[in-house]
Figure (cartoon, helix red, strand yellow):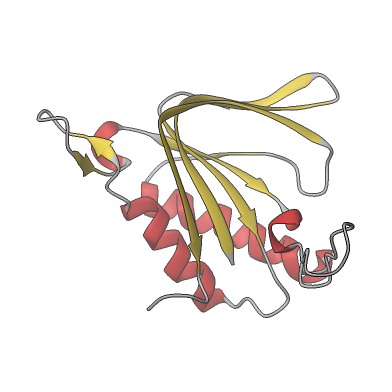
Length: 150
């Protein structure tokens, strides 16, 4: 599982011109699921996301996590994170999980993040053509791969 995590002051996702979800302070998380991902990958990555200490404390140091700043998450499924661009100029998405694998893991990640955070999170719609807007705070952007834990 790959996650691109952006610390935001605000973010939203629209589908067909209608805002589906909007958050203030928190994380915009773009989540890429591959066919080899497991519930163990989900648990590890979910805990890592919620526990990231990248919000400023009173001294201006990145020392606080989402709970400490009462932040939330906007989670967007993004199969293109698993694109291979090694050959030619047209990306291959063969490593991205098919919907029958990806949708259950995406839904489990939503539930896991809500449980870990202790409140609902916002989401896009799996497989939809979405327009995402964000105000990246910092900017702070992290990429985390559940297959690269060492």
